[in-house]
Length: 178
Image (cartoon, rainbow, N blue to C red):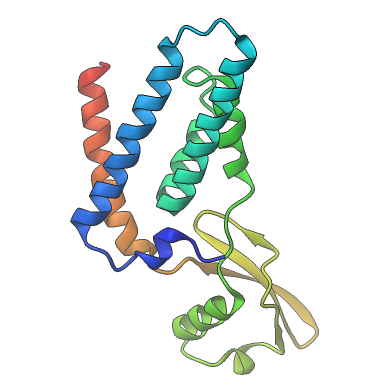
């Protein structure tokens, strides 16, 4: 499954920053609204929290690896978020989108400078695991099995923009909540 951030990875710094800050402002609004909302129907409030948690999780996936990592970190912060939000963010711990086996093959060949057929006897196109930064494929050579870790494409450029924005966000939060 190719995700949104991969299709947009050639976008500009400004566009990426707008995407990030749009999410940050939207999430802040949603979370503050839940915190201060007076709801007499507890079940309705729990349902709203679940929906907001799902929206945050899906948005983090769309924003890509940096923000999936942020979501994984935030899923451990039971002191900051309601259980329903934590439950959704916890799904980021072990269910990340996969990229295609064909794309993985081309990444490995590009990185190692040789066709896969010269490197391995077999290479399974279906990953056995996918994480925020990459995925793992099984390959064999001479009867031995190998786990081939394939890094997601475009991470370096994405991290540069994302980390700059996260630094500004951290400074902002530090000033607002010393």
